[in-house]
Image (cartoon, rainbow, N blue to C red):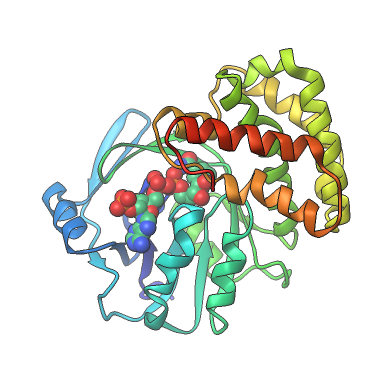
Length: 306
Ligand code: NAP
């Protein structure tokens, strides 16, 4: 098992964080880059750099392009949600039968799209609370300790390779409830992140918009219940308030994306919730109005609304 390489698709923040830790633990790792130009840029840097506890360390993790012929048995998809399906499609022919495909994407929608593309692979969804950002190309700062919940939504038995992640210092646990966890994270995101963009504020300042937050939570609870996600609906408003307080000084991930002129994952978060409401015939005026305001705001900044 330990001699089977881990292929990491996307050497961005989380991809580099996972690749560095697996490589540091002595496991065979390959990062997969878009094309020859990105591979050349990577080689010029001499590998991946990980900054952790104020220390910078470089790891000469082997890299390859999408077109490399090496078969893939263990794949970690570390692209943004809006890139995942296309990126996986371009390496689908390289996947061995029964390959494990770990999906790190935030929100919902992209995981199912990838799973539909790969009927012969075992797709595993991850809900991660770890935090990392790129300080330069192929260099990542491990900014927030967290945890990874993994599951395939079906089996309750943890796969044996999970111990490999633990040995590499990647904290994680198997859960039969991965979908409720992903839904819950999506719901928290819907109630907090878009408002921080629209009010141009840190999470904590949403205390001044308490009615709006509560209205969004109330609608989200109905959506979750109708989608069969009652577990994810339980105590949502209370948890949103706890998160707002606990992360009061932070800027949300969506806020940071917009501030840095990067495309957001709106279609897989608030957009996914609005579509789910529509499919279930639920009137969700607050969530829909929020989506429209956000899309207008993104357009005014030259950013896509999907
Ligand atoms: P990121 O830093 O933007 O990295 C994404 C990487 O995917 C980039 O390096 C990009 O390549 C690469 N990529 C995109 N399309 C590709 C393709 N066709 N072939 C090869 N590589 C491709 O994103 P991230 O912050 O790591 O986020 C990844 C996912 O994890 C997101 O869904 C995010 O919401 C979730 N997440 C992130 C964090 C965090 O702290 N960062 C925490 C929890 C969850 P280029 O470099 O060439 O553009």
